Image (tube, rainbow, N blue to C red; front, side, top):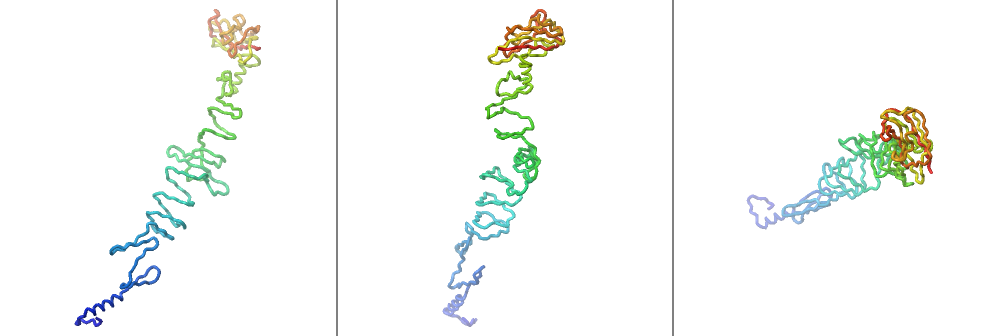
Length: 379
């Protein structure tokens, strides 16, 4: 066969010998990323494609398939575009150099999370935090330039809410503000209402009105239910739960204590009866009238007025001054001495009644002025 002749005919033996010599000499040469040049004798050796770290191979028919493992363990990975799908588990080292990252499902971080940017945004419906303490403005050294707290965005309802520390006034405050979470420094705060079921403190400074349901002094176990003004009257609020105003005290003293044991009232026209104060109501005392004094500065007239009567028990009791005892139609002073037999009804007024000549018909005067004083005592 070596003659390579166009006229000679080879025998079977010569053909086989030639083919065997040529096939035995065929090799497959290849080069890997490492390990140097390799050669496979196609006559006596088999070329094998073996899987490595994170790779496996499978042959079927005339097809060789190379696959990535389901779980990939990488020591150093550089991604120039996008890393998509699957589960990424990092047991050591770090991810560095990334400018952005987007996750469409849950992210669980088993170690510490450090964020070094200027703004952290959380866009979730509810945020739950298991921490016992949360420190705002952590790491501050030196003087504090900022108000510290929480901003509550209110949208179109009005200014935002703020609850936190007002650095300029050195105290906590509930307020409204136009500031947002991106603002710093001394915020513009307007104090807002604050509601709580209870308040415990060592002192309080209130610059406006105070409305309350009740005030309790725990030391004395006294609950204050209201303030009593002059219109309310102290006599109608004889208890340990109300506080009288100065006007109520003056009114009560003038009508019940006066200059001594007296009742006094001004007399004016335009009415057919005038009450001269209220007799006290102290337990164990019996009150009686000593004398009654009228000082008439202008004589009463009009309405067919003829004379006055003075009765105790709001006008329904005994007559203390009869028609002949005092001439209220004439200016002057009238002193009616009583014998002390006229007992006064407690907690009831002594009443001056303006009468017509028949002694039973009331007269409403149109002119006149004076003062009536009842001197009383008790046993």
